[in-house]
Length: 240
Image (cartoon, rainbow, N blue to C red; front, side, top):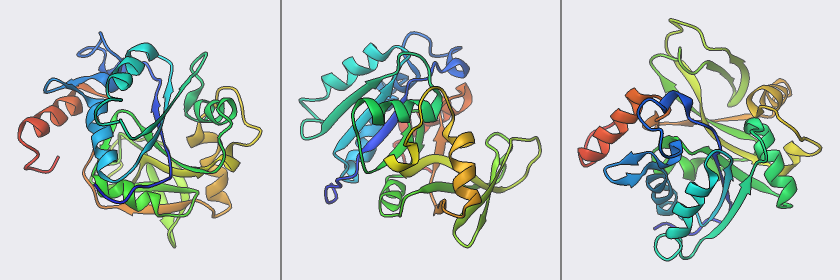
């Protein structure tokens, strides 16, 4: 394990996972089983390997199942960690859930944000942790159609483009962020970070782009969930 890092990770794990429901419907998406172990446990092992010790779980859908899973790990892999739970009363969107957590738990300072259904190489989390907030992890892929595209200039995000078919190669938002509680001051209710916070930061040339050279997978659809399972079963010898 690397040197301990003080910066906490906010894990977005409150969504309903409707796109994955055809193959995983008895547990919330973060607990989707992979070779007999919940996907979320692989993520936590990934973060622990990089020295992270503080985790905030942002929950709503089937929150109790996720809490039970985390609590069961407190005597093993999470025994030296700080664990916090934030349960949204209703689905508040990515920005709303973070703002609710900051307000209800009286959090101040910088933090990382990750999605509970997205995998990246461990080193990417270290890169992001060492960046200056506000920043976004971005990845170059051959087809951005499913994700939308980001435009970068001099190391800063310049613009966000909506999803469109046959969009070709480019940089995408990897769903990994380093932000500060300041960005959520006086924010509440349901809203999206991607639509209400990031565009303004980009307009003011404040939003850094951290270019990551990493494997990336979002298990939110059955095809990629299966791809991650195959990768784990193969002994992680091959790239995703």
